[in-house]
Image 1: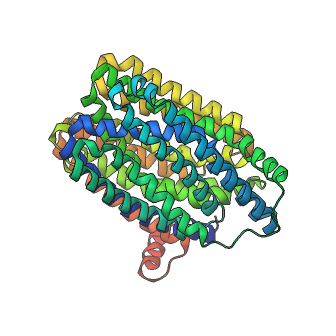
Image 2: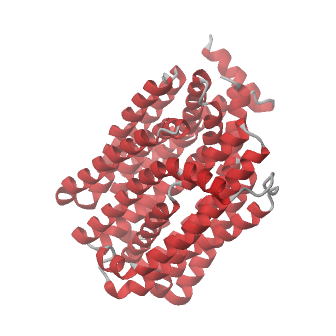
Image 3: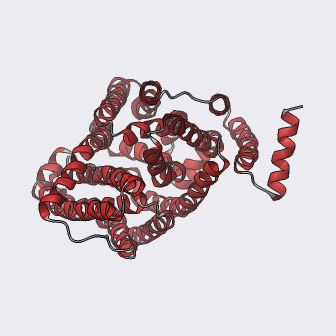
Length: 497
């Protein structure tokens, strides 16, 4: 495996990861204040509003945030400046129209959405304000596609840091000033700040090359992106819509308090994995798209990314499994105790999720939209069916168990598709790393269920050992010098006898 490839991957992960750490801290502070001021019911409503906005934004965006990234990355690798310029212009004008139309349609049906999904017709005016977030989310998706496709990693990180801190500050201020009345402002703060910052950094890029393209040519370029993006949109809609359906189901069957417990655990999982999964989207996806024609290079890249993801996420997952009760109390309040059990099951599922994400990008890079939609549909069907079946038996914990079941089915499926499409196989290093992380996680989870203090101690000890191994392994693969290089060399000599 190439040391340069590992260095590039680690550099992107460190840049995007550093930005994500700032976002994590900002979001954790926002969640803590929301939990104290609003309680579980308010936190659940925030999650429901965000899910509604994301679902509508996914439909209105037609998947151009994904297909646009692929088209720009492919044009940069195979075409020229004129080709990139044409894709950029088609992306701009197309998403502008989509953002306006999507916001208008959401505003027109806001009363129906409030009655059917929020189960509170009196909140129709609040829901109508979400149309602003829908339009801005579509526009911000186009900005992100451009920056990622051109591999502007630094600008992506700056947008993430600014949107995370700025959105959190404005959201907290809204809650502090207006209480429950500031819920909508809190939800809208993030897309507003993300769009404004994205506009700043996109405007600094070199203007598209070539003469202005005639509208029919731009329409054909947009149509090509929309055709590919439709499959991505459907997969996003299935995923986001599935989680929205689960939120609505939990609220109707168990009430707003249970919905808040689900949202609390869900927010933690989405936050701490962001630093690795965000790096995949920012660097790995464009690189895989450029290399997908060379099967050997693509297989090597997927294995490298999987190993790095497990190395970076493994210690965090194991530590959080052991310290889950204290994590929930620290980030929320004692009222969120039931979220601990959800979080534990979700963390076990996250290991499989981390392994499946690099494989899922194979279908993205190949443009295999139908196959990707089918995999997402099957996985989400397992999740929803699991919640429906288990909710009457074990309550809101069913959401965590069903999440694990989702990835028990999804991971073998995307592995098999990767094997069929590019002859993919995991390397021995990936197998060893995966078995080590899964074994440590199961051991810590079992210990924590028997004795919470024992689970915390074991989780911290194993996480520390895994963290040390992560440093050694990445030092070996990147050819790091200095003290880390000497440690890696010593480790290599010990293993080789």
